[in-house]
Each structure stands twice: as structure tokens, then as C-alpha cells.
Image (cartoon, rainbow, N blue to C red; front, side, top):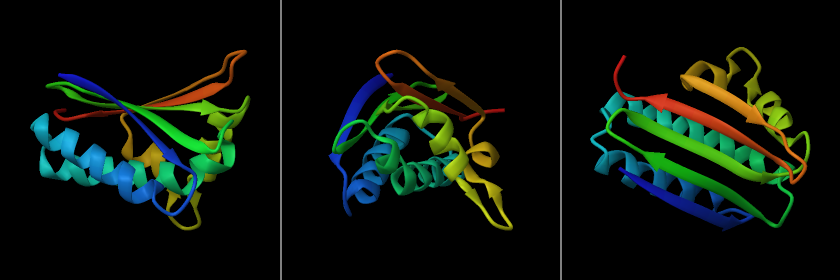
Length: 124
């Protein structure tokens, strides 16, 4: 359906900008409301932790939407950053937010850095 890249300078606006963009794109893709809440939980976790693992002064997320779901590709992470971001998303008494909400998680490492791919399906 569409692809968008969000690049937000590390700081207080990461969560607000990322949440609004993902919410808008998910709504345009006819995302069910319960999955929209899940998408926003993913953006909250990403915005809370990605800046610590970024290779630059920004959080970079590619967002792909389709009829069947949403994919977030958190990129421009330092080497080892994808696994570290995934690890940081664990909360005491709750567990790992990303693992509990995303349907598929794929940490990808490479010589140019890492990316963490999070997929959320709209229908089971």
C-alpha cells in the first residue's frame, strides 16, 4: 500500500512523531483498532530505546503498510544495536513488549550496521 521513512532527531519528539506517523499510516491501511493499539505500543518501545543504539543523532524507521499488515524497519543502528534494542524492550513483570506484541521480529546485522524489523499482521 505504501512506504514511508521517518527520521527524527534523538530527543523528546521521537515518540510523538513516530506514533502519529504510524497511527496515520495504519489507519489509511484499514488497520483494526486493536492492532492499531499494538502498533502504537511498538512505536513507544522503539522510541524509548532506539536512540541509545543509533549510529547517528536520529532514529530512522521505514514503515511499510499493506492490506495485511504493517512493517517497521528500525534502521541506522550500530552493530549489535538490533539485539540490544530488542533486549532493552523488556519490562519487569511484563516481559518483552516487542516480543509480546509483534507477530514477527527479525534482527538483521550487517557491515553497515543493524536494523530491527517488526511485523504486525492485521488479520489472524
